[in-house]
Image (cartoon, rainbow, N blue to C red; front, side):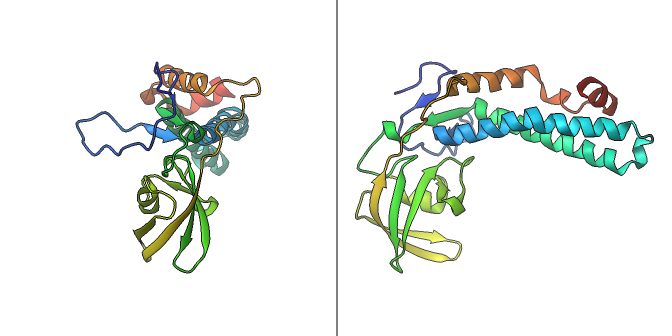
Length: 224
């Protein structure tokens, strides 16, 4: 289901193709619905309770006196900058998201978002879900479509063998099964993914990057 507008980038397209040309627009942030919601939850937590707590502690530290030698103030100021940097990064990634629901693209080949069961050369069975760079977590079985294993699996069918060059050497895998998990279960009355992307873009427009590094006095007095 191709998207029809910049605020409804929720697509069921197959595996995204890497863009190596510098003359082309930046590559989109391909992500599953669940992966997008993870970014959204982190964004809302950092922007809300986490940031408020740090600003409050920063204000308390600022009230203690000389800021140049106040270790707590210096620490909280640095922490606030890190939080604001992460918030902005998340806003950018959400604003350019291209959400792909694997359940909308069931196939006989491995595609973005699907879970691939493989058997390695030792007979061990492993499950990998092919996901976007922002949701990759190899320890949890989520691998980026840009990773060596992700690239090797994309487009392959059950019973096919793949050989992958990884950091520790060559891996030989046989594909056992493909699963296409359902996407977003529901919003529970919250914003849709399209609305969340639009809100992220609006937040970026409302906070130009050169204005994010406010003075100490502005941060403490205006946001405490």
